[in-house]
Image (cartoon, rainbow, N blue to C red):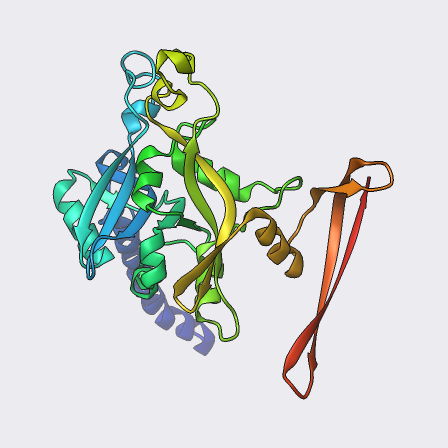
Amino acid sequence: MGPLKAIKMKGQPHSFILRVVSFVLISVLATCLLGGCWSKVEIEQMAFISVVGVDRADKDGLLVSFQIVNPRALTKGGAGGGGGGEPPVFVLSVTARTVPDALAKLEEESSRIVRFKQLSAIVLGEDLARDGIGQVMDFFARHWEMRRSIWVLVAKKSAQDVLLKGAPVQEKMPGMAIKMEMERRARLSPTRYPVTLGDFLTGLTREGDDAIASSVEIGPMQEQKSGNSVKKEKEGDTKEKATGGMKELVFSGAGVFRGEKLVAFLGPQETRGVRWFKGKVPGGVFTVPVKTRATWASLVTDRETTRVKPVVTKTGIRYDVKIMDEGFI
């Protein structure tokens, strides 16, 4: 037997053992992967939060309102066609010291596991915002389910009222209405200031910047709901009674923060001015008087560019702002 053939025969047992060990390892690994997710939770066991509202309850406490999706009302196969007339969402409010404490109390009352995967918006009450939102926003910044694309709004007065009484006219779920309203490109009337959680947190923490968020409030229902009729004033029935006491969500203007405290609300025109200054006006219609003809003209803006140049002087710093609009009359 030659030396080369002896070496080959000598190496065969080691190769066989290596193949056996590899096969065993692959089999064990495949068995582990086929076992599924050990921490899985069925969708029927979850309670999806659509909107969260946070108000100041007292000097040290919070009133946290959770708007939870009612899946029975959204299924077409429900009794009576679409849930048998059940509301698409319901609101549970909890008084607690902190938002995590409120979430723990909600978990105790709920038969399902609370999830924020479908959270569309966070609404901050006016009293809370004026006192300071640092502790509240710290929870939303750290929670593992919070996406940076969630919308942040400031309620004029109570956030709980927005969740309880605000009824969108064209959408079933208020959370979806808020999401679509904030995402919609307001070409004709840019009078609100949509901001996501990530940008809002940046405005709160970055030096030299201030956070701004769209304001939301509830106004009289402008459109009758099917099955209701509005009677005349002399008959003693108002439009609000005819719509079951519900009011629609109104998005106009914005809240301005200094640090973590709300300092003022901007009107629609002021909000548009801020967006103009920051170069965030996608368009708009501006109606101005024409003195020579004693009438009005609408200027439609297609796009605009803004250039801000800081100028250092002996008395301080001033800014030269140049805005160029392109559009038609």
